[in-house]
Image (cartoon, rainbow, N blue to C red; front, side):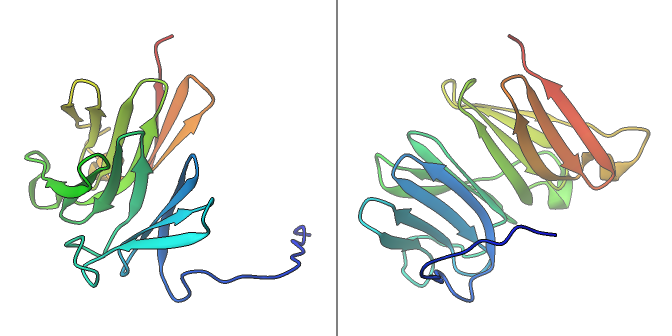
Length: 178
């Protein structure tokens, strides 16, 4: 049986929003949605802030995932990688040249704090962004001529030495150098 979660006062936030990703940063939660943009929740002030086309502070409202670092927030979208520069309070869009028609469709993100690397799971290809060097690298990980082995859907860190990449036909594993 599943454990029950008792709540003194059940609160519903972002009712009706299709939540696609949640990540934490110090006193904030960042939440990506598919249809309502990106939300930032201040745990200290208990206040929500919304980046969206409705609020005219972000061009897109459809996001698949979200990642955050000290200086940046990244949103995974069909058109590419949306990048929020916290210091400049400004969003920009990164497009990818490799991968053909679906090469800009980003479905999964993971920021690895220990290496300062953003992993970007795309519909075609895996990308790595070295935040310190501001350099992107692309990888085609197709196995046995199966294009689904190069279609990334999820990324998860496992301890301090492994990163798992979920695809439409299995997983890839990356062992970080120590």
